[in-house]
Image 1 (cartoon, one colour):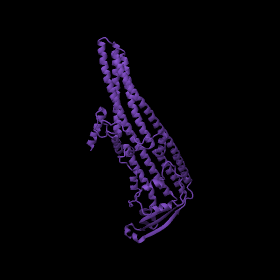
Image 2: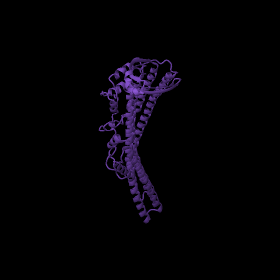
Image 3: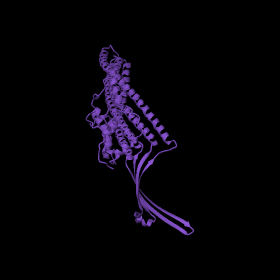
Image 4: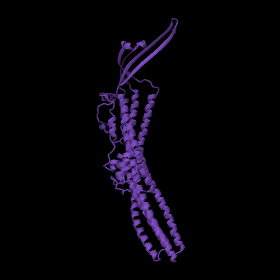
Amino acid sequence: MLKRSRALASVAAIAILSGIAAPAWAETLREALALAYQTNPSLLAQRASQRALDESIVQARAGLRPQLDVTASANYSRSDTPLGVVESDTGGASVGLSQTIWSGGRIGHGITAAEANILAGRENLREIEQTVLASVIQAYADVIRDAEILRIRQSNLGVLRRQLDESSARFEVGEITRTDVAQSEARLAQSEADLANAQAQLSVSRAVYAAVVGQAPGDLAPMPALPNLPADFDAALDVAMQDNPSIRAAGYTLQAAEANVAAAKAEYLPSARLTASYGGETGDLGSLGDITDNTSFRAGATVSVPLFTGGLNSSRVAQARERANVAQINVEGERRNTLQSVSSAYAQSLSARSTLTAGEEAVRAATVAAEGVRQEAQVGLRTTLDVLNQELELRNAEVTLASARRNEYVAQANLLAAMGRLEGPDLDASIQAYDPADNYNRVRNRGSLPWDGLIESIDRIAAPSIMPANDAADAPIDTQLKSEVVQTAPRD
């Protein structure tokens, strides 16, 4: 496997540096997107982070369950008395069991906060996914653009070489001066430099493509039309305000912060626990077998009421409130950022479309003009410099057109990303979507007991209420997350 990986890396490196086509693995944008969706390291790492975040719900729900512990002790003492030395050794063992019945809502609000944070993490995963796929689209468009520019530079170099040969021949027969030949030589040298730059830029773009997609590009197919493009700016903005992952993540983060405020307020309330213990002790470590003769069983209930904490609880509430304020402000900040992103991408898309239309007309007119100038130069109506200048204008128009095609396509992809519509299945329905809910459903009930629901319901009785959730998230936590739960047999 290691040798094969090195071989593939070598093939990709050679293809990038030399321009040789790599094996035909991802020759279309659909194939490139599918490959990056399955193998991109940034995306895989974020999925793993989300699975780690799913464990927070297991930890939060652990407070609903009893705690069981075993304690063993051994002690030795020696005392010097007027009557002599007195030695004693004791030992004991006990099993303790405790079950929280009511915590004033601390456990329940902790579960709510964990669920909100998990939903926020899912939106962050969506954002990373769209960022990666936007990078794939940009890398794909860059390779196509730079390959086209390289073709233009190669074609221009061939034309200028023929122009230099023609100028040299005409100079030999006295039709033009040495100055005309020098002009042709200068333009040829500049064209060779432009060709070298185009080759370097293509190598850079191929390297970026290989890093994002996971393999070097071959002969890429033309860029297909992107789906779900908005009809106008208002439609794009309406979708973005509902589906943009940054806005939705900020909304869920706000819900978590508000739950933490309620949990902090619950610290003022009493808590109730049931306890039980069983064990015994012996006065002689050498007779541990007799410990069963001194065993006892205890059971009871404990109610703890905080009376004075030195300002700790009030400080925690104030701290949680300020963090909720930060979360509320961040929601508005993300809305503004989304507005900026949508506006910028939409404006760039319109600008690139105008440039593309103008570029097509410029290439058509420059092609006609270049051919006309060449024919006029043959009959002495145009100078060599006129021919060179018109040829330069044609190539510049072709380069501008290639860049405009790329810019429009990338701006459209960025617009879809700002709207929250650039996920894998959005671009290609055949891509098998990664569903983070699968792992959540798998781990949520780990270690659960039959009375978890009852304890949670009791814990939420008379608990401090949570502030109304922000509408950035389109569904309450209970509906959004708990409806996904697959009820399975308790597992430890």
